Length: 80
Image (cartoon, rainbow, N blue to C red):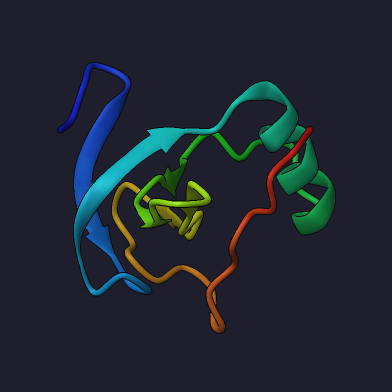
């Protein structure tokens, strides 16, 4: 279910409409470093739970207008 912080968008790796959310501050910092960019505010993260037992999420990245901005897809690791 989408909330004010999530949106239902198509996920390239899940191959279906899934909830996506904006990146947190630590996630933005990690992606900025990886991509060498100043801003990554257009990216959304797929939060579809792939394994209910472990809680593992898809974590595929997309933008609001491009469902597959990277080839191959970039999945953001969990930032602790």
